[in-house]
Length: 512
Image (cartoon, rainbow, N blue to C red; front, side, top):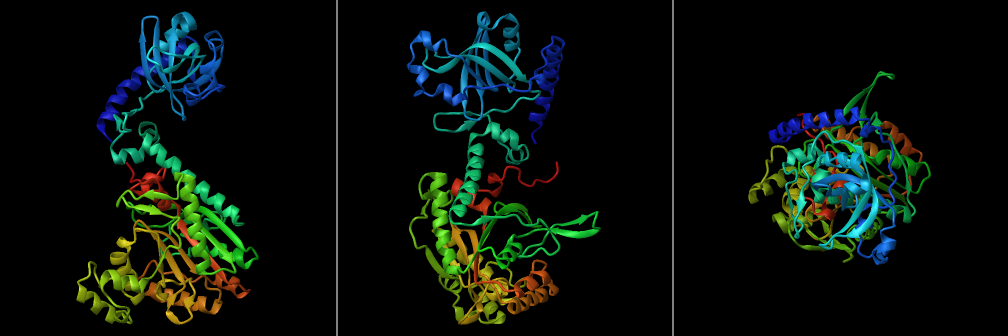
């Protein structure tokens, strides 16, 4: 946090507290106001197409408009002055004259500070320079600001100056960032639209939205370390969920055929431009469909959301400047091993054992340490991540993941080393993970046992055994397709954000 913001702010704060004390002594406590009814918001007043601008002067000056907002500019001279009020919709200029509002109210107006909240009543008019404004007849101080917001100003090209600029400060003081940087507000508003659009799409497809537990005895459904917590009344340790998967599958077993959940999950991992330990996940499960059915659903879903949020089914990737069009279907399907052949130069025949795979990696001079790779499946996924993924700009389904790294996906009937799983990539980012789900409880137990063996070898992210889930599966589970999408990454892509923290209102930060 910059020293200037603190030091300068502390000096002004003392002056503003003195003003507040004086106002209260005069019987004008701004914090006593509980409600202020508005007939118009800022953009409705200044709208050039609004009907009030077509009225004759005598009718327009008889109008009674009320609005309110935060003071962002204040220009008074003598017995009159202009000021700017800003609400969520935008900015409106007001004109305040002593003869109209009275001496007492005008003195309060002159004493206003930037960032104060003000309510006004008046009529719309055009200034000599042609700016739509509000001629004030009544003015009320609604709340006193004790600190000044660092409001930014935009030029004709949309560039912002004088705003909060330090990145760490912007994330930590998000409330100031929203006031100071219009672009930040636009991105975060669009992120909310992404989530709303997802819900509308799934509801329209007949899916039922549900809620599942956040506190869990067994945190499964993903390869990640959970956060731990303790329930005092039960005197038992619990974990925060790392996925939505296993409880949603229980609902499929229980007779629901199309379910989804959009909720927070928590993974005890590092922070980067693509990772935040607390993030929003959407998972859905549909009975009687498979991986191919989920692919078709994803193609339609992403096109629909992009149209809702951006008005068209395409966008320009902020990193590559390539136009990405979700409506160009079907999307590319690329088996993982084939991608490694194309982009790393290692043939599938060289990836049949861990030893052979490491030898092939040494042949090409891989860009990562081979010592950390304990399984062939893990090595294959690492090759994909390093060599294939950066090339996946246009929408692509990567299919045929290794069985070792996919403990919840069905095996391919013709090759048990691979699974019926895909991840969807857009602009070199993973934007979805889907399976033809295992519904064989015996196979599922064997997969969990394999994961437990990896855990014993030191893999802290290997999937734990979940006896209750296997018991549920033993009552019978229909063929099912499942999908998980990180909503924050999807919002990043559609808004052009370069960091996941830009699309999370309050990202995790180190303590000050």
